[in-house]
Length: 348
Ligand code: GDP
Image (cartoon, rainbow, N blue to C red):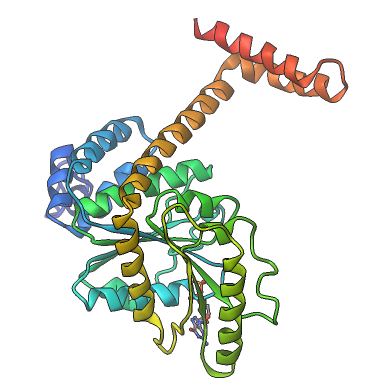
């Protein structure tokens, strides 16, 4: 028998054992619904896990949380690295918590596996918000595909809402299609920009202007203030060229300084106006319903693809088919059919 007081009979540290104690779906659900942040974090870990037993748990947990009525607002925030996303989210988040809101911050960063969590992974970011009892911050889940990362984040949104967070901010750096993924899981999409050397519209990714419900030019302070104001006018002009949105909302442009904490509350006012407009139009609800449908279809696509590429017949023949296609020995369409047929045969 072990003689050390803090070890059990097998010599396992008791404290460690306690920390690792598995929580049942009921424990996790209850903790989340009670707004317990430590349990919320563990619930998210379960949702992020790729282990089979966790997957089953995660489905049950999400189902328990889905039915809970929530009046939350989901806000997507994007902008290139260095634009001031974390500085902005810290200030914006604090502004909201000081108004009695509970704020959760999540992230979609498909590069986080490679760079070991480039966004929100760094503990020095958002130091004030991290300490705020009414805030919850979670780094991006890691994953091989954007689809996987996005799915996990979307499910985490549900958990945060069930835990009583009124406002969920989802940050992304806009790598690949990550803006589209985030846009498809939020009610309001905010694009952070910097005032450039004059031509503001250059270098803006195609499609992003259409997605934005507000463009906010950050770092409108010091010598940069005038430039930021000019950029605002330029963006406003550019937005006028776009057809009106089906949600009845005309995207707004504003300036702010996350460092000087100016123009921040104005952004919240824009969001409140947006909610009033889109809720009147009935768009808010229908948008969420369409997003649910979108994610269903997306997930089916992902799962089918995964299954297909994992089938041993496909694994065996794909390489040779690629070679044959490259050498014009078979048409790509015929090759796809042959692979599909071998996949279907394997299923039987
Ligand atoms: P992120 O990469 O988009 O998350 O950007 P950060 O929040 O890390 O900010 C990048 C740099 O810009 C930091 O050095 C910030 O201090 C600075 N910064 C952020 N917001 C402002 C602002 O409003 N004005 C000025 N002058 N600098 C800012």
